[in-house]
Length: 227
Image 1 (cartoon, helix red, strand yellow):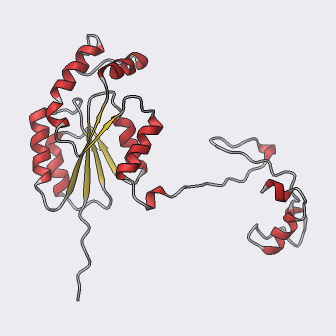
Image 2 (cartoon, one colour; image 1 turned 180 degrees about the vertical axis):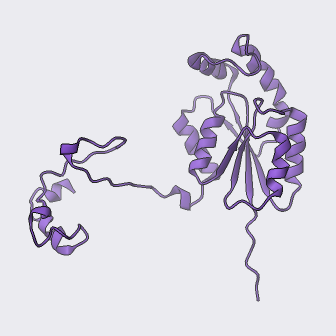
Image 3 (cartoon, helix red, strand yellow; image 1 turned 30 degrees about the vertical axis):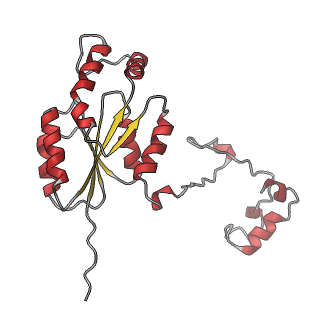
């Protein structure tokens, strides 16, 4: 009897300088089906992975805001996880040019975590120097300079998406105009010109999968151009 192959859990460590797009990457991985834990203290990471195998891949956000963050500690954690045979570990490093990081901080008016009382440039320079050893250990390096959030999401999907996760998802929402337009729609199609089978007593209880309903709606000459 052949044993069923064991799926080895996957863990992606997401790191990089503040403002390079880590939050966007974390959200994109979550949309791809990863279980996301952000700003987990490094000391808790080995204990997390020593627990029961997760039912889906993990994405862990790590940066200088982590409570016990340190370059040496992070490198040691990467080495420790890479040596394990029960996990596949990847380091995703997000980077951006200094002038781009300064621009982003200027636009958001946020304080840099390493320079809370000074100009963001000081914190940016210090953080980039601090993360040089971590950057050299990256399995996937994405430079987000010039990338929009949509571009970055596409890059995350290219590196970490699966064939199943790339299927287009479409949600159809039928509504009544007398109750107003529903919120959050990307495309709204006005179908009030169609013959409404609701007003035919024989068809009222059926739906659009019924052949007679489809034939009833298709009798209107404008339907072909609409489709």
